[in-house]
Image (cartoon, rainbow, N blue to C red; front, side, top):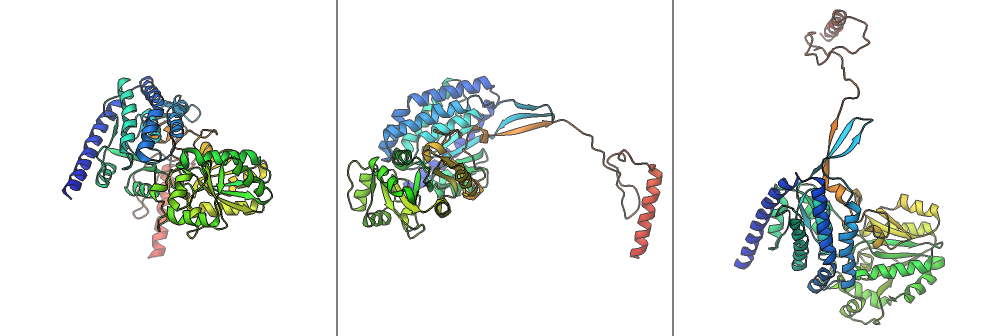
Length: 500
């Protein structure tokens, strides 16, 4: 107990110290010009890109989740791709002039940002959040997941050292090293912290929103994918297997359920098998579902981000070495069907529906059960159907003819490159966007008069005496002030006489 108490106290004290240091650093950094800011960010991105593989290896070794080669790609995406998408965004001084409406817009940072990091993406999320925070002239304090403190701290060290070498104030990018619930609570509630970015489990995001200050969070991403009879089935199968297998499914935007249009269902199943999908028997699917989920619906940690072979072994059966993903054929969605939940592993449910109307309904059912507001996908060449899916589905990212992970994070689509995918009001958040630099600064507006404001003189009805006038009578009034006064007095006297 004393050791636990000491750890809690150390964590709370570290939170206070880092918050105070971050505020001092940010108050100095706010005066940097755009060239200085961009030089610092470019140095951060370059250092992170160079260390992408080493950080990926550290993450896999520490968490036992995912694939080194795939985490390397994510680290490269979180540094190079993210930086290229924001490098030309102006975040200092005047960012826009509206000559027609005579408004000048000026960027202004939040201040100190607390960034909660998931164990599933412990290094790439650090690189991404650090870049967009500093680009917007904020300081950032990283909160690692208790299962990934070393690799997260190392990712912070890489970008912090690069930033300071390029001229950033010391303390602008820091990381909690004494991790506890008490320390986390202390940091998030500190007055210096002006914004929270929470990426991780549902409980983490819920807590971030409960602190009582602005928070950008994401909910679960139980992503349904509809494959229409008009689709390129072979491409769909390749993309599904590659995406669900990518980093062993730890990105929440990967396909959680495939809904096949009945006429092409058999073709899709064969194409999936050809690409490395292993279809589970009903008994195997039941074992896996019962083993990998707790009674409250949360995944057992030792099933997150594991290979198909490890997943099967832990559930009490075996699958071939060449199996890249596991597929469970299902007919229902809900608490009694564990594998219809979000699965942060290379597992996908497989449904068959006849026609896009039924497919649409099944997609909505999956999203409503556990992925509302996040992402869905479809393979289809009928533009009318695509538009109906866009209009009707309760998801803010509708990915068409592309892997949902690569599409949702902005790798294979034109969406903003991001590793924090907000779920909007449907998912309990304030934004529905891919979070990026634009969400991390506010905008001041200097507004010039376009039209004069001349309200009429107001009188006190009780005394019939003129009240304090705020302006002269509006132009166009023909009666003189004395005539208006006499008229108003007469009306008031008559009204008072009626009431008496």
